Image (tube, rainbow, N blue to C red; front, side, top):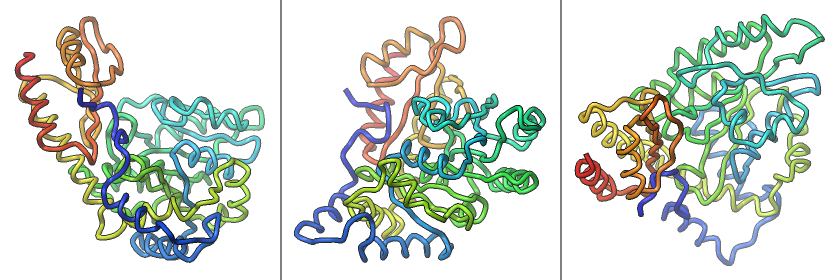
Length: 341
């Protein structure tokens, strides 16, 4: 049974595995202090156009979010996110466990807008409520939508107006950037956020993310925060090496385009058959709404995730394409779906 449940269900892209295999027999200094890690760091800085950035490698998205957000906020401060945001729904209250409130707003698009920030600030005006300080967004979002450059510019302007910091979760940044609906570049993001992370785990890495800190005030003592949160890896070079593969010949971006292409073929199938979506399908996550009976039949043939029941007799299924999804996998799904109809 082929799985469209997620984009991290195979070990790693062959080029990532090759880089790791090539390290056999070599020795490195620990905790990301080695020359190899520094070389990779410099390459990423050059690619994003920010030689002044601080980069830190992590082994997963939740620990990246937890460490970054808890480092930024003072005890009385909070982070703003949409109600479908990863930190609000899929991280077991990790942020709240550090004593920081996640203030959520409803957003049908999965994207945060200046009006959402304004509404929250109008309710948090004095010392009797938490002080909003950090704005959290993700690209692509939890429901597969992507930010346009104008939207990110507007958010950054709103943050600057109120002295807020802007943080982008990039767990699926490759897919978000390479969406046909996106006019953003990674260089744009490096100019329009105070920190963001480049996700590797969901685009072919074994397990690796890299946090990019841009705002000068956030850089101080960050390694202390990493260590305190249990995220300072002795084999830091093992995390960095995966980005050696992903950022050589722009493999990261090539894979982002690839997963989106495979997803778009499935989107076209659903559109041709007259089915709608929970949100506009703009990346490698598709949220298609199907009759319950058809959804059950499909789930008997494929590993899929049921997200919700938007109406009586309907089910919303999430399909997620991966760097390892082949054209044969897509063709077989299309054939099976047509047969089930």
